[in-house]
Structures are given as C-alpha cells and as structure tokens.
Image (cartoon, rainbow, N blue to C red):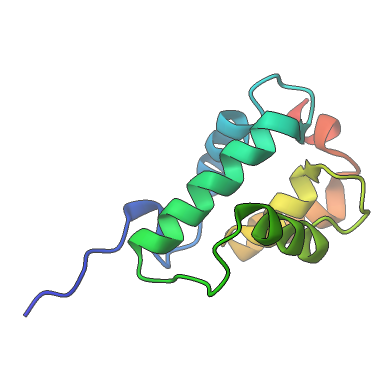
Length: 113
C-alpha cells in the first residue's frame, strides 16, 4: 500500500553542509551572497512546487500573497533578500552545521570564503 512519494529534496533527513551549499549556489545564481529578485521568485516557486508534490498545500492560491507571508516570516532583517543565515533557518540542516555557522561565521561572504 504505497502512498504518494515524497520528493527526495523534502526528505526529513537533515542537509549536510555540502548539500546546503549546493542549494545555496543553485539559488544564489549571481553569487552575490543573497537570494533576491528573480532568484527569490525561483526559490519560492520551487518550494511551493515541492510542497504541493508532498501533499502540503496551503489555502491561499495567490503566489504573491504567499511570498509576502514567507518573507515576513523568514526575512529577519526585512531587507527583501534571503541571506545564508536566513536560509539555514528555513532548510533542515544538520544541527552541528547550524551551530558552527552561528558561532563562527559573521556573514554569508565570510562563510563562502
């Protein structure tokens, strides 16, 4: 009795640092240290597609409203961009990676170096 298959990228296993960086590089296409503009739209569309594929569908159908709600929740400094530290709060990362990130890294560019 098989239920709907969950997308592999939504598996409950936590992302390793390497996997997290792969996701970051995929969405921060211009490499400027932020997911913003079209990159942010792409990120949100893929996130919504993955949620729907996993059977998690929100009640609102308006993508713009969903995106505003998402940014209000996760864009902690309200600059209209997602920084690496903010993405680390969204994705299920390994606790040791997140702890290391918080304690030893001041910025996204510092981490990338």
